[in-house]
Image 1 (cartoon, helix red, strand yellow):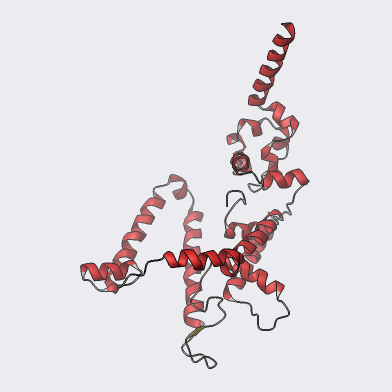
Image 2 (cartoon, rainbow, N blue to C red):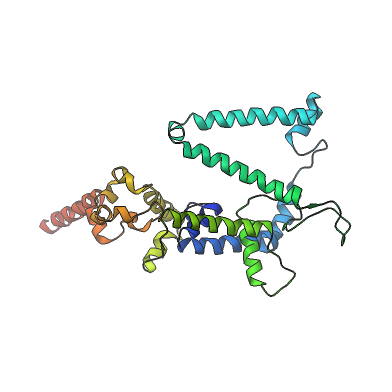
Length: 295
């Protein structure tokens, strides 16, 4: 997630906003998810991880466990735990002054929660069939798992790639997960176009690819930490000293976005020479070489 500049949902949002680099993340995330579901990693998941699970007699959920230990009904414990956990989360969230400073955060959280609950309603109530005429068993229409589903942003990417690869197979249908992933991209694109923030972003050269998605973990985390310091274009004063000394960033800061990592990395020779740590290091090297030559 760190090297890919976000989780699965963030990847879909960035694609909708025109970030072509996130398409690479999408493809590899979908391949890894498919390998975990049905491929090489799937064999490890079924043969090792699932066998290491523990099945409890009362049930696997907290209300069932507490009901068997303390005696109240399961429905009572559901209400109690929902109230306590919800109140704890609200207290933690609203303890942040930054969160309280804008109503947009609250509105976004409420809308996201309603959309997730709406997903359970669509797949678990509207799409529920008590007895499928073909199998004579309970079924949930247009779901990949055959159970209730809501928004998820890992396995739907794998199912989307599978649907595209087996496009001519008429038995394949657009499931709830595939539609939800495509809907996030479409919604992000609509918002970006409406706010005039849509902009195609790609790799300027081969070096831009390695800067954005480095293969060495330590070097990659360091570069990503420097890149994420540029949270927003309006926060130019809070950038690292290396980025503040880059005049190109000041000149074009209105055209920069928070997702544009490449200009912040300042890995060009000009950016390195401007940074104070490099100048100190260069001064020491030159001084040492001069003393050695005098000797």
